Length: 435
Image 1 (cartoon, rainbow, N blue to C red):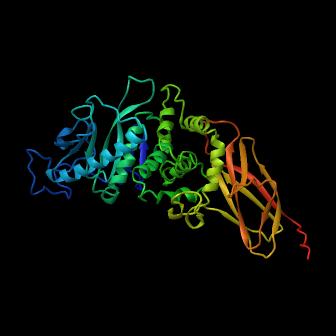
Image 2 (image 1 turned 60 degrees about the vertical axis):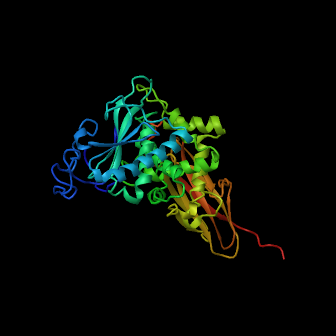
Image 3 (image 1 turned 90 degrees about the vertical axis):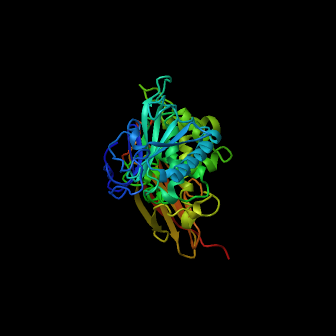
């Protein structure tokens, strides 16, 4: 893949998933552009690896290898001094393999038949200068009727996503490698939300992905499934939805995520089933819940994070960095009228605050502006809000309006246009208590 995003976010294209910052490489020098003093060109590559080379075929840039004794896995590196780092990378990928393949049930990376490296083992290249990590396709698999591909991985172990982040970066990228064994031609959204979710499964005590939640929570009106072309971390923070499914419906069954990917194996011509089909089928067949119902409850859970965490929803919700963005209204007003906007599988939030000493009661008028959207209005606590809302004194009620497609959609048919619902709250007279 060529090019580099200005913001240094993960980039994606057909056949390549990339975690990268901008950089450049040039042959003939070391990492600082000068010939290394202690380098034996008979066994090492003593310059910088150009970014333009083909890792699979230009083996001269990576003359050294370290093979796993546990897995069909080879790490390629350029300098003798990189052996310790190669061993660290190898151990981290072995750990991800154990969790993601052996425990969760993802399909192992495909044997590439020698199309990359000297044999069919999975190849990982240490590549200073890419300043990130990526997984790229090698070849499709003609032995299956679905879109599975062999891949290889590259990482700059000392770049922006190396160092202390290297193990979780490798868990993320390895998940892309196993995704490719099921379906390499899905929307980038499902690749990134799943790989970010996988980081937390391999390293449950780590918080490296938490920062992505800030962008996701900032735009609840965006669809959970919105592909924003890597302009923000939204697609990564969308892993919140998978954490919800795990904790709400699959608490003792982390392998549900691998089964979703197996269910996405699709006909190359029709590209169906897709990730919406797979989510729908797994939820309905295994837990008896519709995707729409699960989405409405997720939007309720989404409120209870950061400063609004109540200890009854997300396990790590108190540690997540940002509450969901919301509107606010004063329950002292006699009438409140708002337009609530969201994409399908998005939501709008309204905090109705009562600072008075008496209860406030409201009738609710709530109507969509189109027939394509089936809005659901609830409180964050899970109550149906259409029949009316009571706000106790010195308290608040949070309304959650979730926009759902009125008819089942495939991923290809999911349009990311904005839909509007008109909400009017009218205060009712409350009789004084008897003394």
